[in-house]
Image (cartoon, rainbow over all chains, first blue to last red; front, side, top):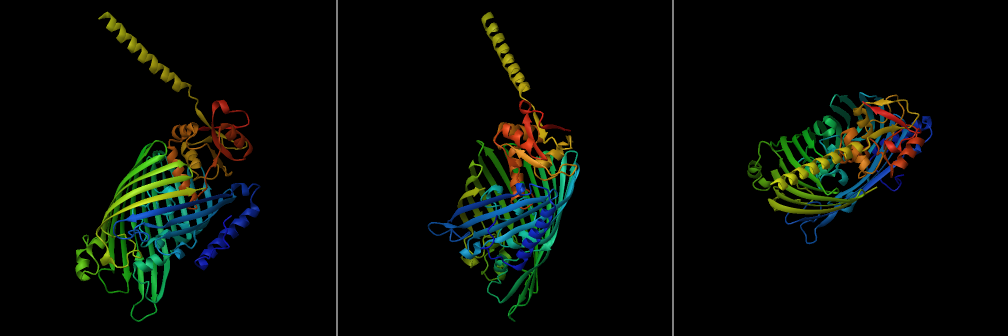
Length: 407
Length: 148
């Protein structure tokens, strides 16, 4: 159902993943009973936002007069059950978050064959092969789908764009298991595969103008999640390791290895009309091949607390405090500012964001949202929107509006 | 004084009557039953399993047959009551669970029906189907599944 002909896939791996998915799907199809096409589902979404800031730029020239419309998310997926134990699913995503139009080139977001080999009253066990979404924290798997987010922007301390590609998905194998206890459910998932390493990572490492290639290496991810009493209380622990290697083509820059090993603890309490959510993350990054104590081995810290309240059937408001520390050994950023002689301001090493937001869903397929952020620090401000950190302002305000549609 | 006492007595009786009427109204509210296609071999489901099936995380009946899940609209009162009373989850939690499945490649969405008459028709005609109905919509073409 997806018009894949016109798309230029980012790399051969995407094609392999799709071929694998289709191949397995079709062979299973041949064995399946009648009515396989009855199980075909096609879904999609489209979101367009307007971002307005007083200082600094977020997702495009947001501090200019009319703000930035360069935050667009479009996706379409298809899924099929060729056999009672098999699900074949793929999604194509076009996302522009600042940058030029070429960023919106559609990519394979996921493409999996899912085989649920065990499924009884007590437990479920299955495997996904292909490109799978990483279960990281509460929101990573569907971070680009507005209808699954409580606000237009997810808490940026954890779900920021700077190393987005590395944590998004893996090309490989993922195993999942669900065990039903007397008053709760334990779900575990582990995945092994090759991460993505997009331009975002290259910019974050400030390698965008250095000749050479940045290639992803093996990654692993695991999540254990406990849902108590039908999901009234949810707790999850996620851990990941992702690696990328930069092969330099110039003697001015040595080869680099980049390793990212985040851990997130997630907690949520749900009532009929309100939810309280908190996540805490430690983000150690190691950069090998460089003799710089400010980059070699740094652990960042992120956390947020969020309260959402539903009212009048189709409205929801939200308040959230979100905090990012880039380096736990230099929380104020003063040491880095002194080390760089003021070129990197202290306020680029943290960000404390107070957000209030409102969502209205007048129809199940339509959502309108607005939110306001007051931010102290530029820790998660996208590098591509603000190339010179010394020209950023420490305290800034942001207003966003978003229209989202789905089918 | 006596008149005041009478007034108080009347008020108490009125309140008691109202609360009794309320109680009997609740008692009259039909229980919502879990129903399936008559060919389904499973006749009992645990509540956790039922919840996993309606959350679209479990795709087969315990004997291996594929499940086809049918639901009413989120704002349909029977859907809300089934979710809360039988599954012990809120409709908004179910919707979010479905969205997360559909947009992460981990599952599919349930099939929507407009009303209970359509629910009964689809369950009668779809092998492996599961859904829910108020007692007055039951007939011998659907099978009631008991929940433990």
